Length: 134
Image 1 (cartoon, rainbow, N blue to C red):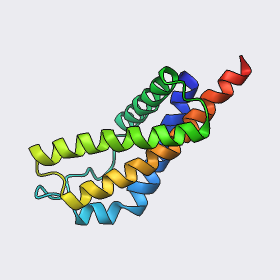
Image 2 (cartoon, rainbow, N blue to C red):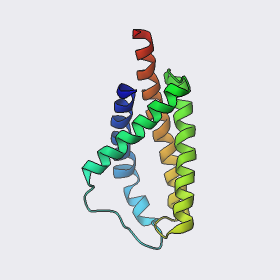
Image 3 (spheres, rainbow, N blue to C red):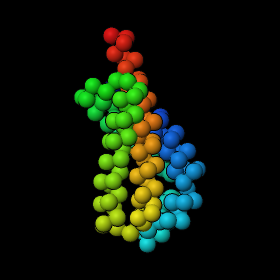
Image 4 (cartoon, rainbow, N blue to C red):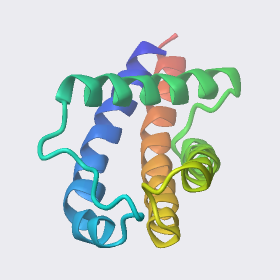
């Protein structure tokens, strides 16, 4: 679980930087909720690392319990888990705050689903390698 979780954390971190930090940064800023752009000038990397590690470990834990131990199964499971979790979180945020718009919410769900699929494939592959070694 630890190896899969760390691999997932690294993948989430790098994909988050690429997708949210580069590709979608201007789009998400332009489509923030009524609260406006509430992002930090610089991220607090300690909490960013903790959050990515927790997300990677969560995927690894779910995959172990669900016997997901291949890249293909990880892609599917990761996409479904990320999509459902992001829809759940974003809908609650939209319903209870003015931090996110419907447009940003749709983009976030799409981006998180892609990130979940790629990271899920990596975690599934790492977990599968552990099975073969045993």
